[in-house]
Each structure stands twice: as C-alpha cells, then as structure tokens.
Length: 195
Length: 156
Image (cartoon, rainbow over all chains, first blue to last red; front, side, top):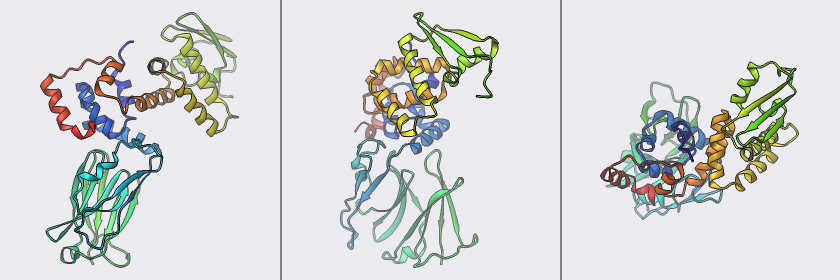
C-alpha cells in the first residue's frame, strides 16, 4: 500500500469530529497542524454542519442555584460519538453552571460564584470557555431573568441576550457590541442590551 | 445530453489487470482524468487505459457512478445504496478506492470515501492510524509524550 498524499489525508481528517482530530494530532507533525490550520478548520466546520447530529440537554430546574448542577447530554441519533463530544463533557463546567442556550456546537451558560453571576460561551469539543460581558443589572440582581435568543446569518452567528421582560427595538447606539474569535472559524458577535 | 459530444457513444476503460469496461459517456462524467482524455480525442469510440486502477475497484466505482447518474432513482434509494456500498467493504478496500478516486480525480466520490474512512478510524488509536495510513511518526518521544498530555481529554 502506497502512503497517501497530504491533501487526501487532509480530506479524510476534515470529516472527523474535533475530539478525534486532537487525538490524532500525536500521529505525526502533519496531523498536529490541523487544529491550528484555518483552511482545515473551515472545511471541518462545513463538513460537521452537513452531518445530522442533534443533541439535547436535560437539566434540573433549580431554585437553589448553589446546588451541584447535573446536566445531561443526549444524542438524538442514538450514536454516542457522532459529535465526538462525550456525555461527561459537562464535568468540565463549573458546578454552578446553568446551560442557557446552545447553537452550532457551542453552549452559553451562566455560572455563579462569590455571589456574582457570569456568562460564558463554551466549546465542549475543545473544552474551552470564554467569559462574555453581562448586562449591568445582573451584577446587582442575581435573580434577574435572562432572555436568550439565537441569531444566525451569513456574517453573524451568536446569542443575543438581555435581562428585560420584553424584547424591544435596540438601536445601534445603545447596543454594546462585542466581538471575539471563539473557534478559528466562527466570529461571535455578542450584543448586550442596556435598558 | 445535448452538451455531450454527440459523436462519442461508448467509452472503453482498461484497468491495470487488463479487464475491459464499456460505459456510456454520462457514467464517466465525474472522472475528470478520463474526461480530459475524451476532450482531446474526436472519435466515435474511445479506449482509455487506467494503469493505476484494478478491475475489481473500477467495477465498484462504475457501479457507484451508474447508481448516482440515474435519474429514476430516488434520493433515499441512493442513500441506501451508499450505506450498503460502504458496509460490504473492508478497510483496505476503502483505501484502494480512495486512491483510485484521487487518481481519477473524482471529487464527490473522493469525499464519500474520505467520509467512510473517517468513520472507520474515529474511535481507533493513534497507532492504528499510523499503521493504516503507513505514517512514520516524526516526533521525538518527548514531543509525542507532551502532545499526548496536552490533549489528554481527547483520549478519554
């Protein structure tokens, strides 16, 4: 068997889930470059989104939010490994984490420590998390309800959230924009509302 | 097929072991390597040698192309066919067909095989992948140990 050319190896690897890509980065130097390669990341993202791989979370409703939070992840396809994210991935989240929303393999969760609420966006496949700005009133009122909505267009992928009872029109001046590169390919634009 | 060169009716493909396949032009549409031959020649019948593809593999590729070129088949029937097609292959068959697809320059068949191979290796070890793809590690033992430690979560 003749060894395969690099472009063919890249094509194969682009159909792997993130977890396997990180595992196989110990195969050789060529493989170890994949997680940092922008072209590869884009190709892998497109391939992943073309697969049917829907999951859902089960999470107890908590009145006492300092309890240990046990959320469960279930795959609709019935295959444990289709996304490469293990069922126990939730263990890497802080105990107080409450999952608020999820889209394109990323999750948005809220975590409380030292009486302070924080919002994080997390990529469970790479087990990374990034804090994001939070509406001012949440700093003073930990009980404030968050409304989360998921937006998606060609240029923008992200979560829109606010702590107000009803959605209202937000003009560009009062909205605070925050951009961050979360994965190599998805730019998240977070709009946080001030009332 | 108005856009097709009307003069060509049958294309003869000759595999590495000498076996001969006669196919209609629409079957080889996806084989860019074959297509470039046809474009250069202007004859009623074209005979094309494919020294890098064995007869058994070429038969499978033609079977795949026929199914996918058919306009009568439903999308579901094609998906069902794809599933069974991969199911009856061994690991080495998949690699050989992938190499054939690469040589024949068949974009969507190459993707299809790459996807099947990815599914096969996903839950395998690093050692399996090295063996399967004939890859020699170019890391020092220290470098490899460090990388494995860094990505420990991915091995669980």
